[in-house]
Image 1 (cartoon, rainbow, N blue to C red):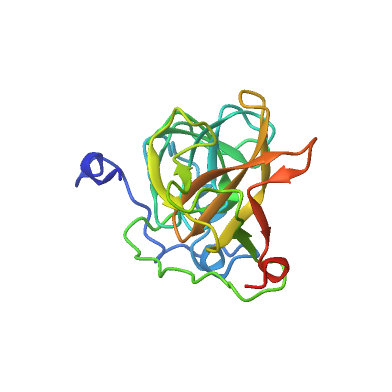
Image 2: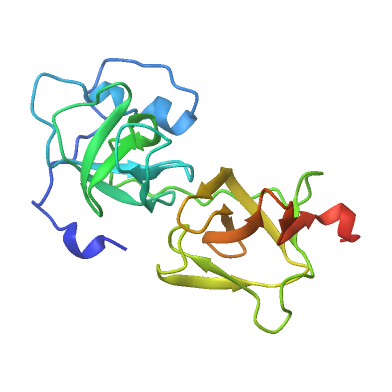
Length: 207
């Protein structure tokens, strides 16, 4: 989505080859080309980093409890907005301004990351329930806010793959779920106080 501004010469991409420092991370991708190995004595502002995890988001400040500027998908690219990370977070200036957890970034922006298939047979798999209209469906938005762009729709009986933890929006006073199957985006799940949700365990629906 941001390929137009990633052109040759626009950023300095740090090649994994030639880096001798070794840092152990939980992700095998980040282990091979981690963000931390780029902590050299030079200014990294303006360099490219690639997202290797669907949990990554751009936040307004260096904390997960801060507002979400936008969500990032595996393979998306960001441009750094400062020299290095602070408390595990680093500023980015494209595709949006804010802060990203450095552990979700790798230095090889030219590497093509394979898609990770979600496990839709796990016991805790959720399905869209029948409170949702079978004709209208449930919108999946770019961000957990109905004023943002619509990315698609999900319908009753469909299995969904949830990414990360539920997000409670102060604006809508509802819980939102980030999904990456069958659409990528945020869906409004319902009201935690009343426990009336738009999703149910697939097993409880007999699916």
